[in-house]
Image (cartoon, rainbow, N blue to C red; front, side, top):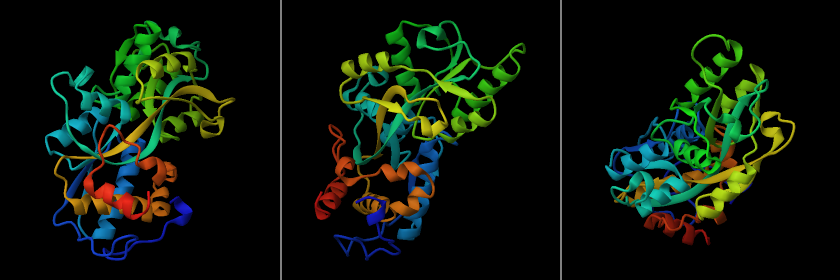
Length: 317
């Protein structure tokens, strides 16, 4: 089911496994993420392809990330949305940021994995998480999954920082400012981000101030053991950002989720387009190449949307 096996799908009615799926009867809204981030880039591409395939508009909404997206699904302010698995599980279980009440939604697919980046300028004297103590550190927008996992990392390290809550592009600009003009007020010493590979605004730093990624391997192991189901021990390969070596970190699966009551036609055509137009989707972001039907179904305990379940069965998954 990888990119090499996909075939172009032009109009409703020529899909693999089912030929009579009706087109959606109205527009859809897709909550993505920070401008410049993988959620937004990937989501914009998927929405354009689904609109092309169905002839019905799917628009995207830039958001702060996972927490905001889940709340928008819960209030029907969005029909589809990305969320990291750890935040989705918190919402499903009604814990941490969702202690006021569990949320209910369905899943279409596990799309790709985020990787936690702890980014510092090449010339920085920060080499481990403990070196962040009392530094100006961006931990992501308040309603983002980045803020959730950053908080867990800092808590595990028993480190207090001067937390900033910038979006990705602002955080990159603030890191650049501090690196270039350390004597001037403003700027940040480090940024923590959870995103796909590569996250382009971060990658661009290599051609300006240069950057390193801090090894969080030992902390990642602690967190993964405590939060089973939301985190995976992994590493960021050196080739992604022209680094000297791989960097141990946490990987976090990303789910494409749907609000309760989303029509079968929207769920089916969105999922079908992800797979049948995967090669085209990869032109928007390389992470689309990570989509694989065998892992895409792994969203438990979040149940699959009935139309998504039907799609996987029809395609022998």
